[in-house]
Amino acid sequence: MWTYLHRVELYRIVRGARSLAWSEEYDDHGPWVCGGAVEYAATVAEDYLARHHCPAGRWLVIVRWLNPDAEPERTRLAKVEMTWPGANPVTEAAG
Image 1: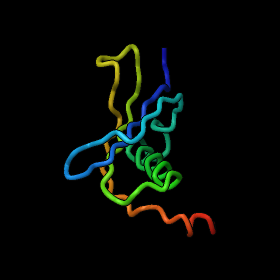
Image 2: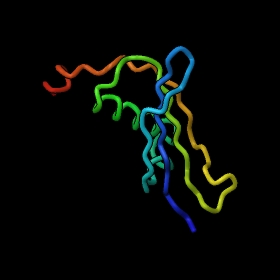
Image 3: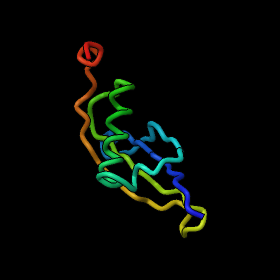
Image 4: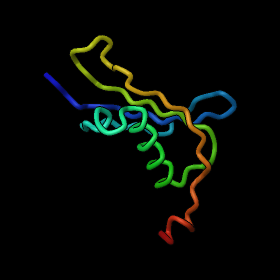
């Protein structure tokens, strides 16, 4: 059976150590269309970081396809490290 169940994991990287900041499982075919899984991972991370006014720094986002028929069960589609400049609540509020 085909499934679009995915897990997004967002880690903050401080002095080389990863700390899980957020994760979510959802049913969406987004990683399979448009620019692909890498672009999708970056877009999801940027959206989360902006909405939650996360601090500037290094971040890592991983997108996994949760396919019960695959080995291993969690198949990584994308792993993207990025530098987030920090959210600006004043600019975002002005829209």
